[in-house]
Amino acid sequence: MFIEGQPFTAITVKLPKTNFMAITNEIGYIMCGALDVALLNEKLAARKIVAGRAVGVRTIDDLLEAPLESVTYEAESLGIHPGMSGKDALLLMIEKE
Image 1 (cartoon, rainbow, N blue to C red):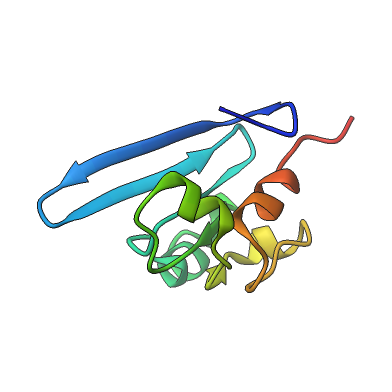
Image 2: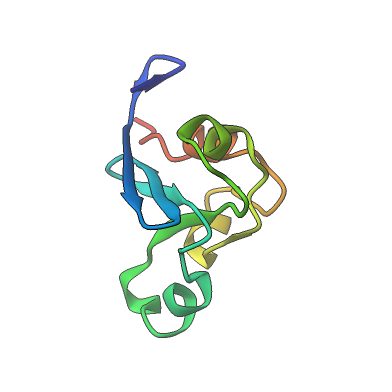
């Protein structure tokens, strides 16, 4: 998929009674409520993972439009913050030349 001309990969896994969704590129990703941001910030901090979590989403379009509920510390360092849309967060995950 492309967002404002930039390539991203959208993944949906249909599970019993729910869907698992993520949109990613080489910098980071946003994901549905299954993402454990606290785990990434605390136990996996050395990995410096750029990620955000949106809750209550059912489709990839929802994930793009929903406000992020939480983000990793590394995402914050790129200007990504809770409350911003998934799409806006992804656009901040584009490698700057």
